Image (cartoon, rainbow over all chains, first blue to last red; front, top):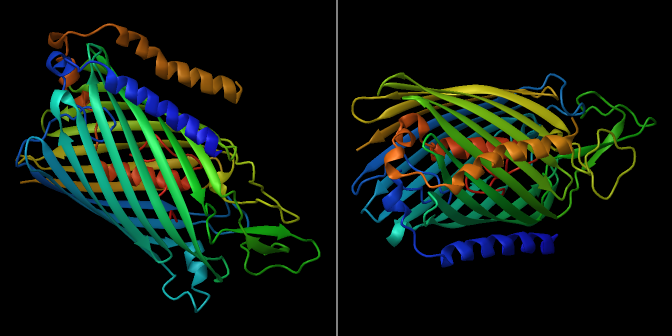
Length: 405
Length: 75
């Protein structure tokens, strides 16, 4: 697995080196499009920030999925997340800017609530996540851009440190920008099992690298394409996930949602995972204030999951300079992980009943409205409804206000 | 249609427009690409939320936000 990841990583580095070694681009002068973002995506910003620009974005997001006997029949998988986010962004000079992100999650779920049955897990009736990220971006010469980030986050049973870096550059004569980014997360987990037992601490490392390519295709069409390779190593199970070993001779288990006959044991998953995702989207101009977009992703990993998603969007200016709208649809389909099973009758080396690792399809319908205020601020409202084949339907809602000063 | 065929079809749909990238578009032809509706949005707070929700509630990751996994206890 490590060898496979290294091969993918080496390929990405070779591609990046070939691009970096090419003659400096003239595309910035030729293109007339705005410059790409310094996040390695290679995608353009609509308005390049000017020196002295500052903004504060406040966002409140809400996520909910209920469980009326859907998904894993043994467990209640209902979940609610409320997430306020604050982002301060400052373009200090034409060449340098930075941003500070603060995220907080209030997570209320049946799995966490269950831990409140165990007095030693005080405070586990809800979980609180807080994370912060400091990122910097630099405009270099000849259209080159670079960025870096450092993040820390933590929960009741989880701590993480993250590092990131990215670089992008225009490609001479091709109306294109290519980018490369790498991110690493180093996590420390306090293992709290489904029954409240503490099982020491474990580490998890995730390194992911993305090569991306932005391309002007025609006078009315541009797109962005990329590949992400991720290698994860360490404790990759979900600590509080349980697997039910069914036994017709056992008494009904009162801890299970359906009082099934059997006993619970901890989920066990391999301690390494290599994940690859190819993604892309193209956007086409229809008329002033109207555009379509077609996006998609193909994903595969060595746990046996293959997935693809397909996401058309429509962008429409409703009131010029005042109100923009976007509607989107997303189809998502995945195969089950090799170690997923709906039923287990004997313990196996690796086993999970996590519904998110099962075969599933989902259809998402949603959209967003953006009000542009007179002073340059804007307010955004977003809503998505996810209909899953396993019945664990989801609602995602967001509301944000960006204040520039 | 089998899954392999679906994957190939989606890949072709995504990659087909790249053929158009072989010819350079002149700067004076790019006015439409500057339209507000044509800008790839990059609202980091929305991307963060979408990535976290999708990554934690689905078995796949990558292509949304700046990472293909990690950095999240994820419910």
